[in-house]
Image (cartoon, helix red, strand yellow):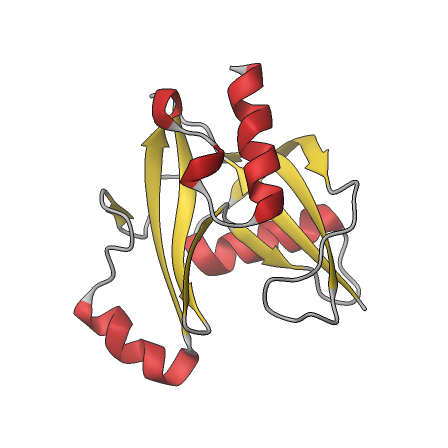
Length: 152
């Protein structure tokens, strides 16, 4: 089965890249904000919905950056092939969620909520000069991180 994922790449005016630190199904991962496309959605609609759910604000979806062009099995389901699509994004309003400064800096409330939802997210920025494939966890994100570095 195919699992289509759509992610946003935000580089702010301070030359920092936004990442999402997450605790999902017992695994700690750092990835770009975004997520899975639902039936009936286009890729840009999916990304707008995912960003609104995760970050509580609206974004402008910009230029296409990358689409997976090789076979990648899902990190969470060995029966799924992942196709990830990345767009540059720009926030249209100030952030409403806390912006963290430390990796996996989850609040006590988030850790308690994990028992119900099995997911936690915390957003932070990484200076572009320190950002690399090592900054993210998932294989496709690593390729995108290298693309970002090569274009900056």
